[in-house]
Length: 146
Image (cartoon, rainbow, N blue to C red; front, side, top):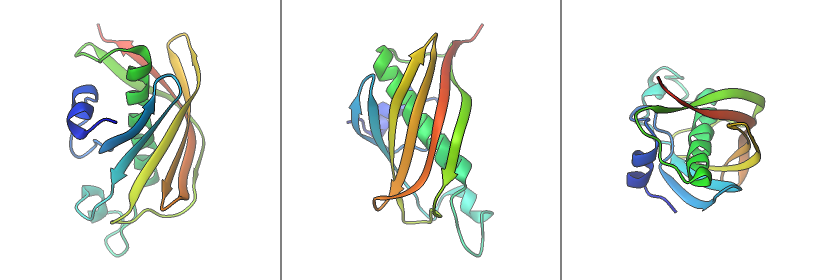
């Protein structure tokens, strides 16, 4: 388990783009289960859509990527510093199955498919009430800034 204080020490993201509230389970090198509480106070709901608020799919993908980053750091036994950045390298097979609305709780299950030459490949599935809302394969890499 990891609470928001531990997450803030590892991820550089801050409001309004920090999209992981808690880590429920983590098995380094294998998988992570994280959650994001979706509230009406999210800034994107003002424009997406004012008459029927729906969480943008790209933000669900970003939330899974943030969970994947936490899994990567745990797997490698490292904490990022000011000279390290974690990048998306690719997204494959993204599917959005149902809308996510205020009051929903995203449960993100991300598993490592492959680690090779500094590139991680993950399979992510996000659920609300045990129903799949989003899934994708994510590729991410860590780089040191000059």
